[in-house]
Image 1 (cartoon, helix red, strand yellow):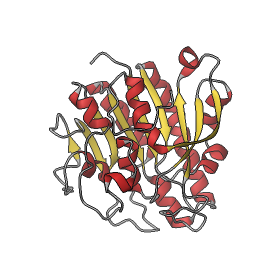
Image 2 (cartoon, helix red, strand yellow):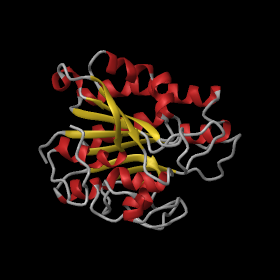
Image 3 (cartoon, one colour):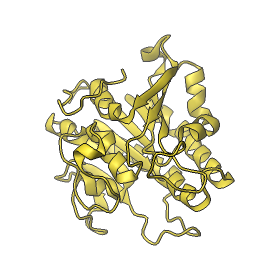
Length: 282
């Protein structure tokens, strides 16, 4: 499939305010006109599984039906993974187990579904991790350095057309310490620092890089509802001067999270399903 290739970086529980305050590398790209930044409104409920599905299907939880993290079901097609695969493309992901459940197999098997190469599901190549036995004192999260390097390795070995890179560490730390904590702010910065090392490598390989989140995090370590800190998230388009031209920088207003899926497909030059009714951002 000879099309523009895309990497979507999903930083779990990265609120818009924390992103703008702590993500010096990404904000530096915006300031230099090499990226575009939107303030984005997450879907309701502001939970991971509903948002993961909406980010890739372009439909709201009330429509796609996956409204709780406790559900064990695959996401209904069409979605980004299905459209890319049906067009003959290769997909890949380094992500938490919920993505394998949604887009490869339900229920998730902690052994069989952790590592997938040339698999039959919507995610062709997957490196998945779990949060089993997660506690405040043992977040059980793989390091962001390892996540980004695993993504680079998938890129080198398989050259996927669409690659999802998902870090769940900010979510784990936010639940443990709250969004108004040193620990959460430092974790947000840490992922930004890893992206400063990884994004130039990915862009040199010909990928358009998008960065966003599923939901925010409250000061008391919660999300799921409509409180002020739970829904606003950032959306960066690392377009570079060759694409951005004089059109880089911050955008006014707030856009819908349902725009992410059609934006990915628009960039890739793939057909946008009729179910994705929100216009793409580019």
